[in-house]
Image (cartoon, rainbow, N blue to C red; front, side, top):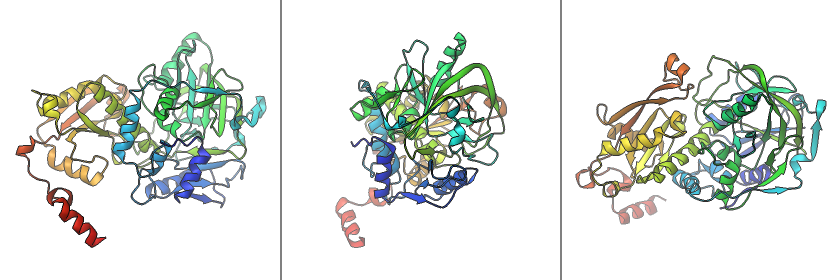
Length: 485
């Protein structure tokens, strides 16, 4: 495992793989940057370094599509794998398994360094003004420019016992103020409520352009009490380096390009939204959300500000959020002693489906349990977790299927999931961005979801798969591969 310790090291690796493109022509942050990102997502293009931005020139660059699907032949997950310290050719199974395995290890505490390049330039007071930096309007119809789409928000509980790193959208109001979503069921919203109950401003730091593994773990729905920084240390097997913020009592990643510091003010709200989102729609509604007030901005020389432009698959809201949620599901199901080979959230389903593949010997490991019975057990485990709201459907399949191969997955669902039987429907928390729910269900945040049984009968009763991999003996396959190479 090779940990890439800052964004520039990551970009150098992408450049070596020819998976990032420098754009030196002027690009307007007002819609053009967002449109460029959407084009490269939807056409499997490289990451884009936008070097000359209208209004700010070459002072601050924008990196678009930092963790989209890769252009490297045969390695669509290369940007994800490299971000997480794996080889560019790592498979979906290997990536998810590496994250799930780290959940069984003890956290590794970070180390605090005295200085870092992210504080080479310090803006305080009136000088700490967001107008110095590009503020991209990412989609036509968004409520305003969104400054935070791939950055990490850092907050701590009032007693300092728990620090949360999270990704949530944050919209610019003016040079000193922002607003963003605080979902009550997520740690960010829960910590904000603790400060609000005390009537005190909540210190925050928003870091942009960190080492590439941080946004993935900041997206991960870890259980209560597990800090992202310690988990990432356990994942890499070494501590992360943090530095003290200049004006708030928080530690921030030393690898950051830009750090925004300040306070979320109690009793002050602003209109937030709408914004194009990961489900592939731009909801019409807005909401009143708390205000962030900026006290300080620090940054590296020639800083880089990454953006993720959410929409129809596949972008970072799917490669990051879907992948780490699948890893957490895998860890939870294995912790419940269920014989799960892998789990996956297909990017093409906008992270709304969870695929659970059982090991071939699941019947021997779970004697007396029917196919419907193990599906029920899986449903019960997931219903009690923080990832409950993410999925509209869970498909349970045998592990002869590679769930990350969309062709194979579509075939398996079409031929193994009965249209009439093996469907378990229950109600639970939902994500109101999912377009399949009614307006009332979205308002309540509560609605139906299904577990669909696609498990085959025992091996002795199955039909053989009719494919190159399953129909022909190994010597024949090798001979044909040599002939056609």
